[in-house]
Amino acid sequence: PYRYKCPMKVHVQLDYFYICQCQYGVVIYAPTGPLNRDYDDVRRIRDAAKAAIIRTYKAGRRRPLLILPSKSPFPHSFESGVLGALSAAYVPLELREARPEQARYIDELGVFVRNENEKSLIGFLAAIESGRLVCRDIGGSDPERMAPPNAAIYVQNAFKDTPVKVDIISDVEIIEKDYPLFAAVNRCSKTVPRHNGRIVYLEYNGEGTPDETLLLVGKGVTMDTGGADLKVGGSMRGMHRDKCGAATVAGFFQILARYRPKNIRVLGGLALVRNSIGTDCYVCDEIITSRAGVRVRVVNTDAEGRMAMCDVLCRMKELAQKEVNPHIMTIATLTGHAIIAVGTSYSCVLDNGPAKKVQSAQRLQSAGDDVGDPLEISTLRREDYDFVGPETVYEDVRQCNELPSSRTPRGHQFPAAFMLRASGLDK
Image 1 (spheres, rainbow, N blue to C red):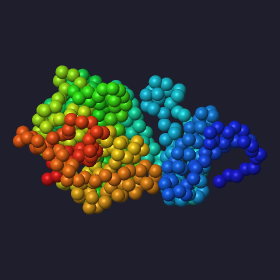
Image 2: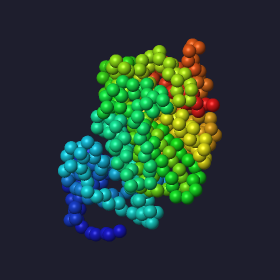
Image 3: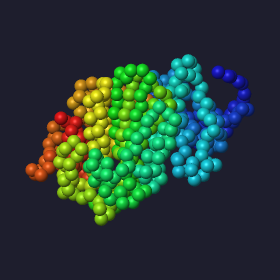
């Protein structure tokens, strides 16, 4: 560390930032607030670092040096603080493309490290941030820029000349034959070439013999109109972000491509589709047989995410039977009920029986708490399976009910039960 002596004085006070002018530049002090109460967590470090970087580039400074607290009650405050600072530097893809001269908020982020352990984490954190950039690019871009064909091209370009293999399925006949539930959602959009759905498979094989295999399925609804059960009253606004599950899977693979962990195999499936409304859209009361041979009664076309993912999930189940120590996960912005249940700052995680035995949800929650990305654990109950059971002899399972998930008891739990049954994972 380089130390220098120079006279400093408070130059400007703005909110809780203290901007100090000194001989060599500007010092921005961003307090974390209290850290010792029962409900304080590492996000206070993250938020302060993020706020400091935002204030830095607003002050016209483009090469900040981040200095995090030397002491903290949180073991991973260094990682959380660096990631918070990096998140502030993100410039949306569409802005980078439209205005190249504004493609960066900062030119470089320096990080003050106090020991070899912190120094060794920099490469890992840079890999994580590269994955978050891919995730934000896909998840945040508008429904045309990241329509299914464009999102597939973005993914293909992102993994060019990397260890990640990409396979894109665009043939309508193959999709209708092998992914019938996905095809139902895609039925209306396939007539518009720029909106036609894509199923993208990703594969990463780390060096050495794998100890485990992760199989990830991401919901990639690039625009959700609700379909025939149209979203009204302004509730369609923001539904271009209904693809954040697929964006997360793609981002995770970017981390793998950059960091290249050993002894692990990862397979991913992105279900990229637009839920459009029109003369050929799927409607309630249809019965569609899934890839797993399960007869599904459509009840609400706004429950399209579970439809789009189920056949890809079934494919992952088929692959998992030949893999070493497989773990299957679906990642989705699946229901508004989750926000009602746990708020806007948290995700829900649910285990099926085998995952519960190895405490997958608890491990994810613990890891999230460590780095300031918290999760809340929900539990699948018998009532969830009963809820999606057949109402008539025509179907094996019903996809939903007539109400929005936010007005349905256990509105984020029963969709998981549906996916387990419709994909054949309950067998």
